[in-house]
Length: 300
Image (cartoon, rainbow, N blue to C red; front, side, top):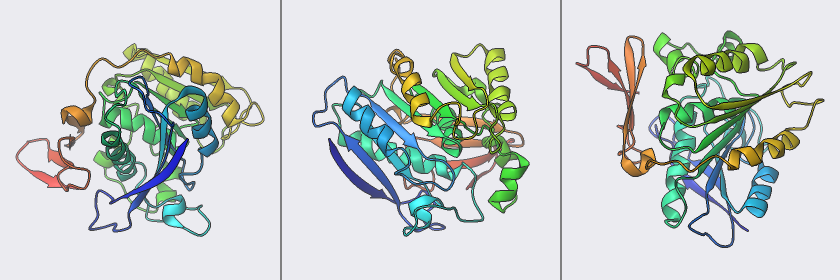
């Protein structure tokens, strides 16, 4: 295996000049069949959170794996301890772009990769980011896996963020509200005794929404499991149990959003979020808010 890191600027560099670091673990040989799995850590963790998961996926399944250190969290926030988070906190929006931009930076380095096999795994806030990534880049992922994942910002998490959110900002972070945008299968798991991310409020609410939309998904509830799924099962055991079904997902048929340079419009009430994947990762025009009248556009 090859292990290295790359550094890229954050998308709103003027407001957050600290660069974002991405950990990459690659198989010795990249073949036309080699897929990609993106791993996203939770609130306050670091890019090393799923290091053992990544190593096993590379060794046993030959995928290229990467994990991005998104802003205000983990090693990016505290290079000494590698834990914690900064406030005011953006709450799974700019963090989604950091993670997706890290994927955008890696893919061109391996032109022989099978870009029709791109998977995303995330836990807790990382699950929220993974689910939102399938909405912000709806033609990119073959499947998305959320473990104990948030699906929106509830009041306790808003309080932790230490900032106010407009209705449009909350809408852009609500997976259930925009679930019709989801095109890839979802793999979900949650402990019924989770006191950090309430099972019924997040996984249960999302399952009902997916059912109503006739989306493809798999969900596993672990009775008595907490946020880490223990004592019902360990996080890694649950991952390895779900992994074969995830990897059996058929290849995505269409080009990914980054390759096609697609534009994604997400209605969020009085404003809509416009994402333009033809723009480079550091561009101030990568995403913007469009007023419902369509007459004015303001950059975030």
